Amino acid sequence: MESQEDLVKVGRALANPLRVRMLLMLTLESTFIQDIAQRLHIPYALAHMHLKILEEAGLIEGSYIVEEKPRPHLRKVYKVRDFRLIIDRNLLLELSQRSGYHTGQ
Image (cartoon, rainbow, N blue to C red):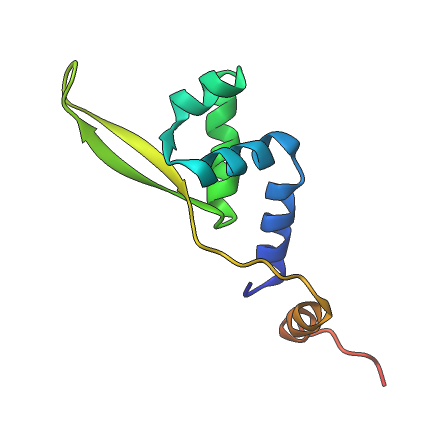
């Protein structure tokens, strides 16, 4: 995590139970928005919004593949990125120093 903004993005992404369910689902297998929406019984647009937040936080990534049938078209497949999330005092201290905070002593 490089910045305070990164910490906020990850926190925001994990603060929603539906996004956590999506992350857990994607841990088991890579899949498409449509499949996620169907499995979770939510609208496609809502699934897309939540996946975008997870992707912006760096927890998942999407890549495009070409499907030939029924006609050639692009589909975005999502998968969990390798990441290790440790939020401890040392990380917070490092981020506070990068942000220019000081103790006032």
